[in-house]
Structures are given as structure tokens and as C-alpha cells.
Length: 148
Image 1 (cartoon, one colour):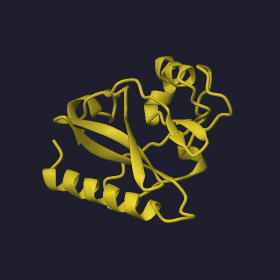
Image 2 (cartoon, rainbow, N blue to C red):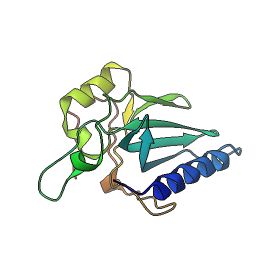
Image 3 (cartoon, rainbow, N blue to C red):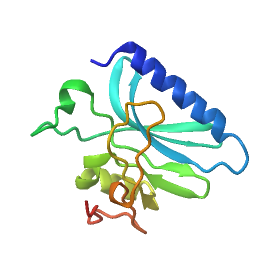
């Protein structure tokens, strides 16, 4: 559905972010991106830090109103937490945060903090960060919800 050149450019940018993140004192970054793996296109999130990236795929794909994700992307498995330095992060993408199956799974797997990225960024190096597009809670549990 997405042009191969776009997916190649996204992969190149992710590799560049990995290289940049390897330098001492560089903070980690969470980015959303389209990602093709094993012939399947996913709405993905990457935690980039310390010279490498950890990818997770969106599990719940909306298909109502203005959303048409099921036509474009394949759903990923229930996401596992990622380790960022001394913290286990859950990265439920956008609507994943509203589904108890996702948040419960992350909590049961030891996530200490949930960060909710949203808005798939298709322009080079576009990162959207604001308190309204992030979700955090001290201890993830099924009742933990975003206020957006």
C-alpha cells in the first residue's frame, strides 16, 4: 500500500537515529513509523537508544470513521515491554491504550510505565511530542487510561 521508496527511507532514517543515539549523553527517543517485516506492513513504534532500536507493532487497528488502518496495516501481536536503561516501558500505540487486553498484557509482563505514541509520522524526522499525545502512569493496570 505504501511505496517501497518510502519504506526504504524510513528504514534508513531509523538506522541514522540508531547511529546518533550511540553517542554518550544522547537521550532515547520514541518514534512512530510504518515498518515492513516478513512481508507484512505494520503501524509501528521504535524506542531508539544506545545505538539500537526496539520495535513494537500496533495490535488494535481501528476501522471506523476516518480510520482505515485494517486496509493498510496488519495487526501485530500483543506488545511486550521494552527495556530502557533501568525501566521497563510499555509502548501501546494510539488506540491500543483503550484495550484492556493490551494494557493488562503489558502490566503482566512487567511494564513500569506506559508511553502512548500516536500519529504515524511519515515525513522524515517528524516527531510529535506533547503531553496530550503521551500517556504515562506510575504502575500500568487495566484501568489506566489516557485523558486525550
